[in-house]
Length: 120
Image (cartoon, rainbow, N blue to C red; front, side):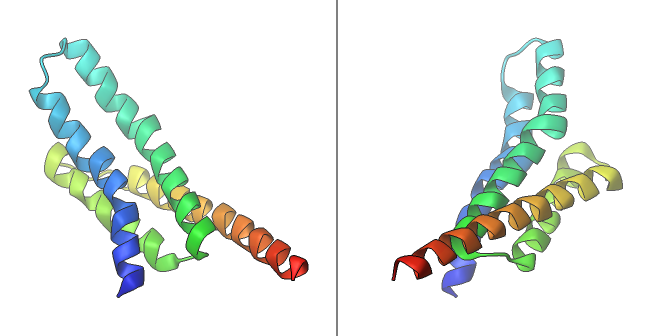
């Protein structure tokens, strides 16, 4: 139960970038070009980068978790409600960025774990 609570805490920034950020852009009084560029930037740059960093941080602390990457993939389905469409390529990119972050974080997790074992 404690692991799931920690997973949900790490998923909160992703909920913001997948769901809340796009809803905020609709209601903020911005120029249409600025709003569209922020939305495209969120889809192509911000969200995959945040997904990579959150997965990396999670794996550094708790080790590799395929369940966390699957939850990230399922969480991306929230964007269907905003955009009204599903693009499998974006879904794949977000899932792969989560797996990459998990893998790199797991590497740091083992390096940290081995350095602690050597000190003892």
